[in-house]
Length: 152
Image (cartoon, rainbow, N blue to C red; front, side, top):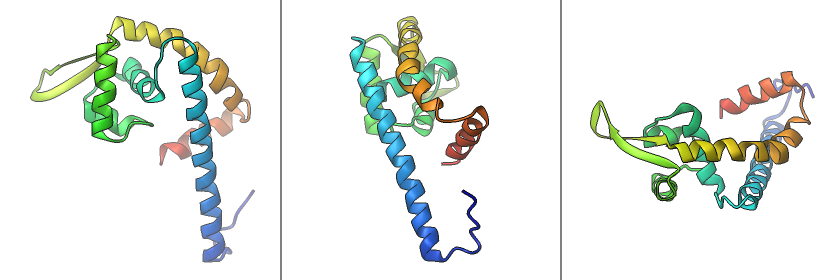
């Protein structure tokens, strides 16, 4: 739908922006609900917030908690992040260690058990969540979508 924003009235533009925002919010909510269902169904008893952290630390870690907070899609409060990290560490999925260059800093890294959990869980998520989601888009559309959502 080619919208010429210059000819839209301010009110109509606000309506279009609201519809777009609500569509993104609805999609995010649905993806989170499906993620929670898949994670709970395979006896791992991971929450979507816990998966969010594991999925970030596995390929990118070790990371500072602040970096996790900036990159996480579901965990936006430091207090919530601390609780999630505590639970993951108790279960042996992540480890916190002193930052080598900053005596006050901490690094979060994934453990072997955490890596194994990610490797075992991702196929379930791909089958239940990603494949149906991606089926709605061409490769070019997915690249555009990733670029646009990355700006948020």
